[in-house]
Length: 437
Image (cartoon, rainbow, N blue to C red; front, side, top):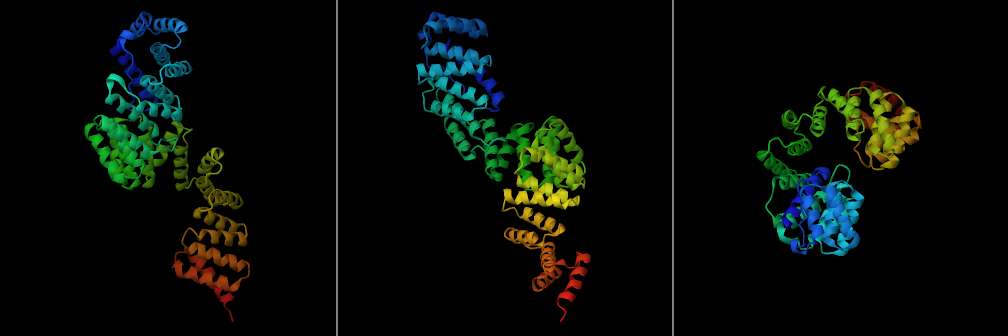
């Protein structure tokens, strides 16, 4: 019967893998002996072996009503509730098991997995940490290793939480002390190295996975990310296009292809992103990429609609505010752009692009003092260029500060080198006036 209970838990863990996207979750084992099971509990376990959950639950509930501290029965009943996706009931029964037997490895680890699957990683981690400190029963080191792997999956960075890549790496190392490395471990190690910016190690690990499984969408996407970070776009494009033939429905690979194409100014990026956005309108990352590509294509009106929608959810995002301000500037909506850039500088005072945008917009609405302040702030984070020299010069000129204006007109002419003929002509004309004896 004990082997049957282990099999039950293997099935439970397998379903947990799919739901929390973990490839190697713990598989707890009973710490009880079959000889210790009451006939009623043994009968319930026989029903469980046949997946007759209704009969098993009825038998266990009846027994627990009379024997409320029977840890084995409580755990079995929790498992039955867990298989039926009865979260509250399963969690309560696992906790009652722990209260009856605090040393129950299987109860701690099962509760940890349950909590992880239902979006409670902090509570799940607490239970799994306890499990790693308990005796795992007959499964021994292999079971303890699975507990550490579960912790690694919880600790790893994800799309919606920062995680702790270093801690996850330590968790995985503890698992590998107890059991051999698996392809899933290699993929996780690659992800963690990637998250920590260790791109050489990440690439090597991703390629090891692909050697054994060339169709792995996760490994292909991971390797593509490394190549994109290195700006090796041709190699990344080749990899992603090949991977998409194997996994045509992968939104991650499709999004990566769009990023690669956009980086290379490939016209195919726009329709690809539009299609992707239509299928995932709530995905902020895709919406932002589409807005950026539309902006690069000169469609500022449409791109700005997307920036505005994104800002409704993230009103203090300095990067979005800068993009919004730049779009408004290109539409000659300078007063609105000034407001957007001002909000951006308040959200991120170290954003040089925000100060640059504010300086230009302020010059267009004839606020030279604001322009000079913005230029002063910008200069703390970005080097001067011909355009900023011209803004310094014209702002000082407007304020009738002749010496400063003349100095910056000269700086502008020294750096312009014929690239701005209209402004260079204006600078020379103003210098004739300003430096007239």
